[in-house]
Length: 263
Image (cartoon, rainbow, N blue to C red; front, side, top):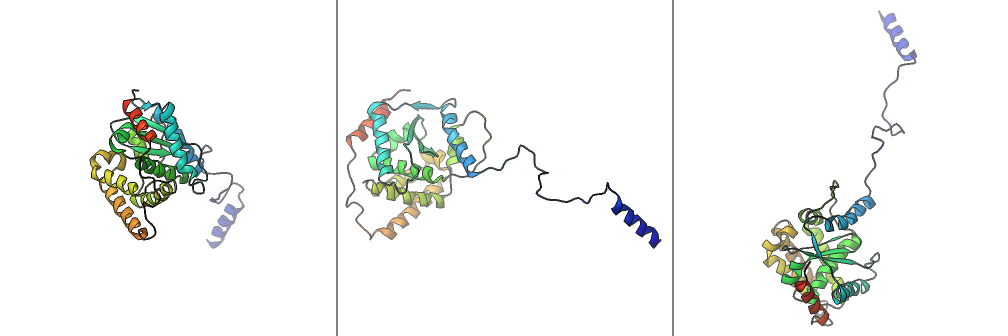
C-alpha cells in the first residue's frame, strides 16, 4: 500500500500539466487592465473640473462682475495673496464667482477658484475685513488643497447641496485654516478682530448657514477654538495697532453692484 502511495505522489509531481497555484505581483495581475490607482493629482484635477460643471448646472445663475466691481474683488484678492507670498507660493490670479442664491454660502476649489453667494454678500458682509476674512479662508484651503477626499461619479451636473457637502471638513481642520487665514488678513493690513466677528455672525445665524456648515454645532466649536487661539496670543501685540479700520469706497461700490445686479 505504501509503495502505491509513493508511486502516485511521484506521478503527480512528474506530470507536466500540474502547477501549484501562486499569488504574486507579476504582470499577470488579477485586477482589470483598465484599473488605475487614484493619485492626489487625479483627485485635485477632478475638483478643479467642478467649476465648469457647477456653473453649467440647471438653476445655477452667476452674477457677472464687470468694470469696477470685477477690478475691486481681483485687487482685494491680490492684496491678500501678495502680502503673503511666502505662504501662497503656488497662488495664481484667483477667480471669484458670485452666484445668485437665497442661501448664504462660500466655498472654493483648487487653483484659487472661489464662489460667494449674493445673499451672503448682501446680508452678512458689512465690512471689508469680513470679506477679506472669507476670501483668505478659501485661499488657504485652495493653496494647501484642504478638501475631504470624496469619489464623485460624473453625472454632468453638480447641485449646490452636493458641492457644499464636498467642501465640508472637520472642525479641528477648519480651526487650523482659521488661524492661517487670520494671519494672512493681518499681514494684508486688515483688522483681525473682524475674523472673530465673522465666526460669531455665523454662530448667531446658524439656521441660515446650515447648508454651508452641515450641522449646527460645528460653528460653535470653531468659534470656541478660535477664541482660545486669540487668548493665547493676546499679549503679543495690539490687534488694532496697524490695521486699516475703515472699509474702502470701492468696497461699498462692490456691495451696491451685487445688490443691484440682475442675471
